[in-house]
Length: 159
Image (tube, rainbow, N blue to C red; front, side):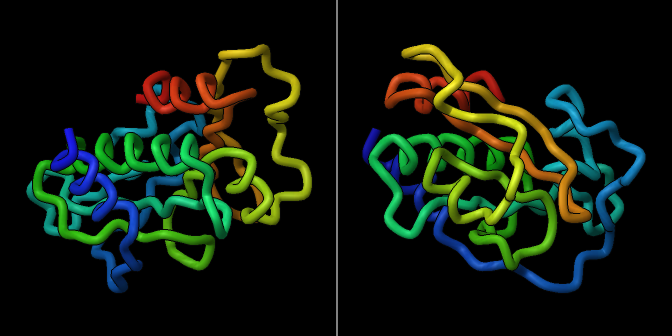
Protein backbone atom coordinates (compact mmCIF):
# COMPACT_ATOMS: atom_id res chain seq x y z
CA UNK A 1 0.00 0.00 0.00
CA UNK A 2 2.77 2.45 0.97
CA UNK A 3 4.74 1.67 -2.19
CA UNK A 4 1.76 2.26 -4.49
CA UNK A 5 0.99 5.53 -2.68
CA UNK A 6 4.59 6.63 -3.17
CA UNK A 7 4.44 5.75 -6.88
CA UNK A 8 1.22 7.70 -7.29
CA UNK A 9 2.70 10.64 -5.39
CA UNK A 10 5.71 10.61 -7.72
CA UNK A 11 3.37 10.83 -10.71
CA UNK A 12 1.51 13.70 -9.09
CA UNK A 13 4.48 15.84 -8.10
CA UNK A 14 6.05 16.30 -11.53
CA UNK A 15 6.60 19.12 -13.97
CA UNK A 16 5.46 19.49 -17.62
CA UNK A 17 7.42 18.14 -20.58
CA UNK A 18 7.62 20.28 -23.70
CA UNK A 19 7.56 19.30 -27.36
CA UNK A 20 4.66 16.89 -27.78
CA UNK A 21 4.46 15.12 -31.13
CA UNK A 22 0.65 14.95 -31.04
CA UNK A 23 -1.84 17.62 -29.96
CA UNK A 24 -5.15 16.77 -28.25
CA UNK A 25 -7.95 15.92 -30.67
CA UNK A 26 -10.36 18.86 -30.53
CA UNK A 27 -13.12 16.70 -32.07
CA UNK A 28 -13.28 14.42 -28.99
CA UNK A 29 -16.44 15.34 -27.10
CA UNK A 30 -15.94 16.87 -23.68
CA UNK A 31 -17.39 14.08 -21.57
CA UNK A 32 -16.10 11.40 -19.25
CA UNK A 33 -16.63 8.55 -21.72
CA UNK A 34 -13.84 9.69 -24.05
CA UNK A 35 -11.28 11.12 -21.63
CA UNK A 36 -8.99 8.08 -21.69
CA UNK A 37 -8.89 7.80 -25.49
CA UNK A 38 -5.69 8.88 -27.26
CA UNK A 39 -5.92 12.63 -27.72
CA UNK A 40 -7.74 13.18 -24.41
CA UNK A 41 -5.90 12.63 -21.14
CA UNK A 42 -3.23 10.51 -22.85
CA UNK A 43 -1.24 10.96 -26.06
CA UNK A 44 0.73 8.74 -28.43
CA UNK A 45 3.85 10.84 -29.05
CA UNK A 46 5.69 8.31 -31.25
CA UNK A 47 2.82 7.10 -33.48
CA UNK A 48 2.79 3.46 -32.36
CA UNK A 49 -0.86 3.66 -31.22
CA UNK A 50 0.15 3.03 -27.59
CA UNK A 51 -0.42 5.94 -25.18
CA UNK A 52 2.96 7.09 -23.84
CA UNK A 53 2.35 10.57 -22.46
CA UNK A 54 -0.07 12.01 -19.92
CA UNK A 55 -1.73 15.04 -21.49
CA UNK A 56 -2.94 16.35 -18.17
CA UNK A 57 -1.91 18.42 -15.21
CA UNK A 58 -3.28 18.04 -11.69
CA UNK A 59 -4.49 21.24 -10.05
CA UNK A 60 -4.73 21.27 -6.27
CA UNK A 61 -4.69 24.05 -3.74
CA UNK A 62 -1.35 25.23 -2.38
CA UNK A 63 -1.88 23.14 0.75
CA UNK A 64 -4.11 20.23 -0.32
CA UNK A 65 -6.20 18.46 2.27
CA UNK A 66 -5.70 14.78 2.99
CA UNK A 67 -8.75 13.97 0.82
CA UNK A 68 -7.44 16.12 -2.05
CA UNK A 69 -4.01 14.47 -1.84
CA UNK A 70 -5.58 11.02 -1.78
CA UNK A 71 -7.86 11.84 -4.73
CA UNK A 72 -4.97 13.34 -6.74
CA UNK A 73 -2.80 10.26 -6.08
CA UNK A 74 -5.60 7.97 -7.25
CA UNK A 75 -6.08 10.02 -10.42
CA UNK A 76 -2.32 9.98 -11.08
CA UNK A 77 -2.22 6.21 -10.62
CA UNK A 78 -5.05 5.78 -13.12
CA UNK A 79 -3.30 8.03 -15.64
CA UNK A 80 -0.12 5.99 -15.22
CA UNK A 81 -2.08 2.80 -15.77
CA UNK A 82 -3.63 4.18 -18.97
CA UNK A 83 -0.36 5.13 -20.62
CA UNK A 84 1.47 1.75 -20.49
CA UNK A 85 4.67 3.56 -21.59
CA UNK A 86 4.52 6.64 -19.38
CA UNK A 87 7.41 9.05 -19.21
CA UNK A 88 7.56 10.52 -15.70
CA UNK A 89 6.74 12.95 -14.20
CA UNK A 90 3.09 13.99 -14.63
CA UNK A 91 2.68 17.76 -14.80
CA UNK A 92 1.15 19.74 -11.96
CA UNK A 93 -0.41 23.20 -12.03
CA UNK A 94 -2.41 25.45 -14.31
CA UNK A 95 0.60 26.59 -16.38
CA UNK A 96 1.08 23.12 -17.90
CA UNK A 97 -0.19 22.13 -21.32
CA UNK A 98 -3.03 19.68 -21.90
CA UNK A 99 -6.13 18.86 -19.90
CA UNK A 100 -6.31 20.34 -16.40
CA UNK A 101 -7.62 17.94 -13.75
CA UNK A 102 -8.86 20.04 -10.83
CA UNK A 103 -9.02 18.20 -7.51
CA UNK A 104 -11.25 19.34 -4.65
CA UNK A 105 -12.26 22.75 -3.36
CA UNK A 106 -8.64 23.85 -3.09
CA UNK A 107 -8.09 22.93 -6.73
CA UNK A 108 -11.20 24.86 -7.75
CA UNK A 109 -9.87 27.94 -5.94
CA UNK A 110 -6.40 27.52 -7.51
CA UNK A 111 -7.87 27.00 -10.99
CA UNK A 112 -9.11 30.56 -11.26
CA UNK A 113 -12.28 29.38 -13.01
CA UNK A 114 -14.91 32.03 -12.40
CA UNK A 115 -17.86 29.78 -13.14
CA UNK A 116 -16.72 26.13 -12.99
CA UNK A 117 -20.21 24.68 -13.44
CA UNK A 118 -19.97 22.40 -10.41
CA UNK A 119 -20.36 23.37 -6.77
CA UNK A 120 -19.21 20.86 -4.12
CA UNK A 121 -21.70 22.43 -1.69
CA UNK A 122 -24.55 21.32 -3.97
CA UNK A 123 -23.64 17.64 -3.50
CA UNK A 124 -24.95 15.40 -0.74
CA UNK A 125 -22.84 13.99 2.08
CA UNK A 126 -20.63 11.20 0.74
CA UNK A 127 -21.26 12.26 -2.87
CA UNK A 128 -18.53 13.13 -5.36
CA UNK A 129 -18.59 14.25 -8.96
CA UNK A 130 -16.31 14.24 -11.97
CA UNK A 131 -17.33 16.56 -14.78
CA UNK A 132 -15.72 17.85 -17.97
CA UNK A 133 -15.85 21.52 -18.90
CA UNK A 134 -14.49 23.55 -21.77
CA UNK A 135 -13.42 26.96 -20.45
CA UNK A 136 -10.75 29.56 -21.16
CA UNK A 137 -9.87 27.70 -24.38
CA UNK A 138 -9.00 24.45 -22.54
CA UNK A 139 -10.53 21.20 -21.38
CA UNK A 140 -10.94 20.89 -17.60
CA UNK A 141 -11.87 17.80 -15.59
CA UNK A 142 -13.31 18.81 -12.23
CA UNK A 143 -13.17 16.19 -9.47
CA UNK A 144 -14.98 17.35 -6.34
CA UNK A 145 -16.89 16.02 -3.35
CA UNK A 146 -19.13 17.42 -0.67
CA UNK A 147 -16.95 15.90 2.06
CA UNK A 148 -13.94 13.61 2.55
CA UNK A 149 -15.84 10.46 1.54
CA UNK A 150 -17.30 12.12 -1.55
CA UNK A 151 -13.97 13.47 -2.75
CA UNK A 152 -12.21 10.15 -2.19
CA UNK A 153 -14.96 8.34 -4.14
CA UNK A 154 -14.99 10.81 -7.05
CA UNK A 155 -11.76 9.60 -8.78
CA UNK A 156 -13.11 6.05 -8.84
CA UNK A 157 -16.18 7.28 -10.67
CA UNK A 158 -13.94 9.21 -13.03
CA UNK A 159 -11.89 6.08 -13.71
